[in-house]
Image (cartoon, rainbow, N blue to C red):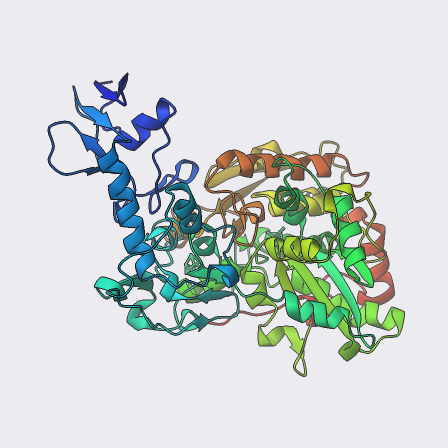
Amino acid sequence: METIKLTIDNCQIEVEKGTTIYKAAKKIGIDIPVLCYMNLEHLNIENKPAGCRICVVEVEGRKNLAPSCSTECLNGMVVKTNTMRVLNARKTVLELILSDHPKDCLTCPKSGRCDLQDMAVRLGVRQIPGQEFAEMSTYKVDFSPSIIRDMDKCIMCRRCETMCNDFQTVGALGAINRGFMSVVAPAFEQDLQKSPCTYCGQCVAVCPTGALTEVDHTPKVVRELANPKKTVIVQTAPAVRAALGEEFGMEAGTLVTGKLAAALRRLGFDYVFDTDFAADLTIMEEGTELLGRISKFMEGDKNVKLPILTSCCPGWVNFFETNYPDMLNVPSTARSPQQMFGAIAKTYFANKIGVKREDLVVVSIMPCLAKKYECQREEFSVNGNPDVDYALSTRELAHLIKEANINFNDLPDEDFDHPLGESTGAAVIFGATGGVIEAATRTAYEVFTKKTLEKVDFHQLRGMDGIRSATVDFNGTPIRIGIAHGLGNARKLLDRIRSGEEQYHAIEVMACPGGCIGGGGQPLHHGDASVLTARTMAIYREDANKPIRKSHENPYITALYNEFLGHPMSEKAHHLLHTHYFD
Ligand code: HC0
Ligand code: SF4
């Protein structure tokens, strides 16, 4: 390894050749401010357009200041990161950025969590000269079902573009126009809804300002809760319990399942349920579909579509509908747990409590922004009444709890209500990459082999590698399983299958890094991979502590089939719990 010796702020340091000044400084504890720069090491993603110039430093012997994020260290270099010239340059750059930025900080949805605001505080900006010369952009706000684009607030950091193009390979966003009017937008300045956007929300998760934010459904939910004519029920996704605590100052990986149920009850929901119940139901349907396809395949049926692809992640569903229209009959037809929950709530449960469909409101708490879009898909409604009325993100729920003066940290642990709140350990692991297929394996193994699975932990299916493969022995029959998280990884895996290079029986895909625990609606983690790991471990902890860990052993699921659905893949189950895809 070739190394370089240099001096930064009078400290001598030796680094590997190719290291940037920014990274070298970080090694010795010098935190040079950055705005457009973003390094997501765990995803192998680095955004360094060197566009904002906030990270400039002085290099002895050079006339111009150098952007530290993209300037490589050289032997003998002498770098100063905090001279008067550097401090003034940073401040001037920030003042210029602010000169054509809207001044509605108080009401901006990103207020309090905005990197631009934080930088103004850090650099001590107290006035914004040059506003009279700056041309304010006048882009209309673009509302999609999940994401709002307010391009007047775009500072051209290009982080969203990097996530969408390099990591997700969706390519919905690119830089357009010049000067004051330059922003990142879909091709031809189309609305997001007309672009190939999947609503995965990864662009929102990295946007440093209020340019990209989620559609806020909290006011609508508050109105429903205040309406005495409505019965309002709530379901909460597996990944929410492993991250919500972060919004209340708790360490990453703190499980808040009990406090979450208590908070939802105090917010006024009439029944507090769990999406995990529907995740168990998904396993019954998807697992049966998988085994059906495998049996036909083994009988020599050439028309059977394998591998089966999981279909519970709406960002992924949007992605394959747009990018793989020739493979629309390959994914499982099972609806996502969010949608299965809604369909069961507005039929089986509504009947049980004697409430009309129109008077029952189903709210879901999701780590995901694509879930907002999913619940608005036309096929998931009956005569215009959606199965799930509103999907709030984990961040929106945190706001709602704070707004309602609920002291979350001091809440007691409470249980979910019955019957749609009871779930198994298999359901909660849906929240982490590999979890859906592990849950399906636990059930499919027992049904296929007619043997009891003694060890339910399939460690070979876990981990953080973007693409993983494993073969699980179904009592002599090898079942090959593939897993991808992140749509770029899904594309690689799917292309291998399409070309015949790889063969699998089943594939799980989740659009977000780490699965739902890294969803676009989760508390912002600023690319800290240890946060994702801690959330994942929390999910597996909850699974390990559950008395029942296989979906088919959930007694409330058995009751649902006995009382209402008949059996998995029955006509009624097909009607309520399955779907079809559109190109
Ligand atoms: Fe997920 Fe789900 S696991 S997509 O990541 O399958 O959002 O947490 O709720 O629906 O259960 C998200 C998380 C869910 C669904 C479940 C699935
Ligand atoms: Fe791209 Fe996902 Fe953002 Fe859509 S939501 S623009 S797919 S990163």
